[in-house]
Amino acid sequence: MKEKQTIEITPVRGLIAVTICVLAFVLISFWQNRRVEDTTALVRHTNQVLRSVEDVLDMNLRHELVVKNFLLTGVSTSLDSSAGLTSRLHDWLANIKQLTSDNPLQQQRIDTLIQYTNANQALLDSAIFLSQRGDITGAGRMISKDAAAGYSYQIEQLADRLKAEENRLLDSRRQDNRLRASELQYILWGLVAAALLLVFIVVRKIRVDMLRERRLKTRLSQFNEALEETVRSQTSDLAASEEKYKTLFYKSPLPKWIYDQDTLQFLEVNEAAIQHYGYSQEQFKNMTIRDIRPVEDIPRLMEDMEDVRTSGGTYTDNNWRHVKKNGEIIDVELTAHAIEYGQRKARMVIINDITERRRADVLLRQLNADLQKHASELASSNAELERFAYIASHDLQEPLRMVSSFLQLLQKKYDAHLDEKANQYIRYAVDGSERMKALILDLLEYSRVGTGKGVFETVNMCEVMTGVSDIFHDKIIASRGQIDIGAMPVVKGDKVQLTQLIQNLISNALKYHGEEPPHVQVMAKEVSKGWQFSVRDNGIGIDPQFFDKIFIIFQRLHNKSDYSGTGIGLAICKKIVERHGGRIWVESSPGAGSIFHFTILAQT
Image 1 (spheres, one colour):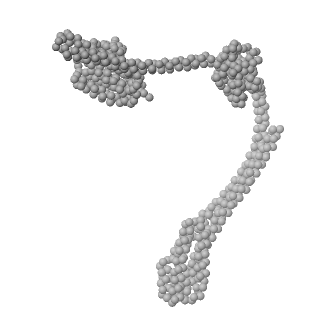
Image 2 (image 1 turned 180 degrees about the vertical axis):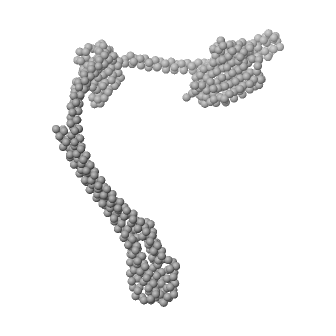
Image 3 (image 1 turned 90 degrees about the horizontal axis):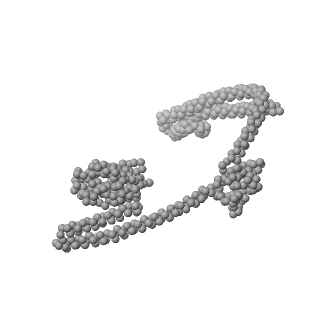
């Protein structure tokens, strides 16, 4: 039946194609014929323009002959036709201008032709007027002026150019007419050939389609057999896939179940759910998902079920609680996917017990709260310590000033009554009070470094180095020393503390010099996370075993009688560097000088 229908449809299609070809033949013939007619009309139009130009020349010449005849004979009857010729001449000029309205060049020429004809007409009229008054000589001069002006010659020249242009257009349009006539003939023959070819193709197509139909019928039979085999194979694969799915469902380490979306009844439950919740397979299937919820959560469950039924997508929530068989309430995170289960709308749910994670989150929040509380207490304690250090330093300095002042007064008043031993004791006491005062001031400065009151700002280290060099200017001159400062960067930090850091390091370099005059070099280079500064000296050096000890508060390597100081300077340097996110270390050996390195972390 299908083969017969195909064979019947093919001739119909062929007939439609032939009909379309004939219609195209008629339409193209009509269109091409119209083109030929348009070209023929243009040829007629050009011939009409040429005839009009000839008529204008003829009328202009006749008018001149009439006027000249009158001037020669004096017979006025010859002027009777002059007015009519003039009127007709202007009518023909207007007609030519209208015919050539599509050609701007010809329009310009016709305007010039009208000017010349008008000028020639005016000249002839003036000659007639003079002749009628008896001024034959004046009329002769007029005619001579006409010959001199050359109006007739100019009119003929313009007429020749008009005719040349129209002849050119005539040749072009005749050629176009012949070309379109040839095109029409070729198109007609082409359409006839195309129609014959189409008939041949349709007949051949019918035969090919019949042969193809037989082949397709054979292939369809073979395809049906292969399809049946594929269906059998896919049925087997589907059974294997279902078995694999059941294995993944039942053997999953996470609890899983399937419930009816309308009745909320459990349909399938895996082994992990049975072990985790404590219900048996039969107990689960006699329950609904409401039965594993705390009573207070059931209203929210029913609201969510309405949303799930309308949305139909994947549902995920980590704010649910479930009740085990033993009454334990656990926090769970569940994901539900819509599935078809035996012609029923169902949901497969994957459960993740997050009870321990919730407890850990609660514990972490508690620890964070405790940490914030301790941080607040530590900040309060630091503030108290800062106030205590300030008050203690102020209160400790007052008795020391009193002791030092009264000892100096005692020495001054009773100097004549005291022996050398007593004066020595007084000097020891004054020196001790002064050193105690310096120690208190350094200790106060050390306690202030870590308070963080100074705001980090853009610091030009070149300006810092210049300021420190000015501070030690007199000391450098006195010791015949030298400080060389390399290129310095701009960093982010506390300018006051960075100045104190450089001042302490240069002070040590100038203090612990050997027999040679002190020579200090300060350099800086960019490193991966900031800048590294180096302060090199040619002093007495440090034994490597004391590298860590020198940065500890109150640790001194030399007797105070040899080198003054409280043992706090490098400890202050260490605190300043650490506050700026860097570290400080030393390279040295006894007698070979020292290099103190420190880094400043780049601030973002």
